[in-house]
Image (cartoon, rainbow, N blue to C red; front, side, top):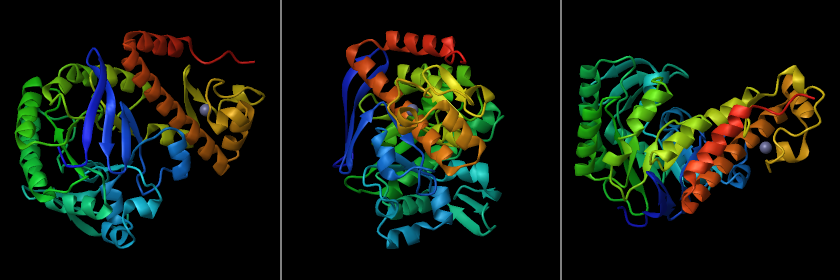
Length: 376
Ligand SMILES: [Zn+2]
């Protein structure tokens, strides 16, 4: 474990755990949800507002930041925390996933990936060494190994070959990262939906040794059932005393299911992105604020929620500002969604600590199944 970085499990309930990751920039209560601050901002939110929802850590995207404004510029300006005015922990991804999903003219070799920027077509290169360099320039607290995610659908042979490459890259990431007290490096397990490959990947990563481990290659379109079937065994293959991170997950019910299966950290653009498209997550499921049924409704989105959107505004107002294209619609709905996610995490943490996660999950599913409040 890197000096100045630690993980303490306080309680367990089945495979689920709750605890604290400690870093020099503050504690991260687990299970933790990390809002995504792609381009050095959680869209439509001030950092203090993100913190007010209960977030202990944000995620930044290496791919976006290396292209614009560039990691070198951010480093000259004092690092990502100072640049975006967030002094708590930041986790950065390695850039690999976004190269595969956003960049064009990709060329993959043993050394790394060359590609053209989706912004201006300029040529760039990412390798384990370059990804470690960029994440260091950004000043990230939790650095992710550079890996390759095979595009789906892929054959077992393709997944195996890609996983083996990712494990060689994991070793190179470890070597390039070196020793950086207070900063952690996480390895990323690959292997698709094949148990044997997951086992091989877990063994390779554990032999190298990381401060935490991500379950990668999931939430890429395989569906919840396939994802949960991997999560039924994959977290248990990773060291018990290190945090386990499920990348890019997810919907609220994905989160509850992943936590029940032993995941400690997650991130997703869903709460912020959905807020900007008029979708609100509530205890009663998803509410589409653009629906005409809200036009005359003076009630809050969710009467139990403490966010500004619910405390001070009606569904009718949220409907109006969304339909009018007003910026405040994105601000309020994003805040609400992030609040909902953080409240869900707090509920999960409390339920695990109390040994009643099963009841909590049953209640969560029952409330969602009952659906939104009746129209007026
Ligand atoms: Zn709310």
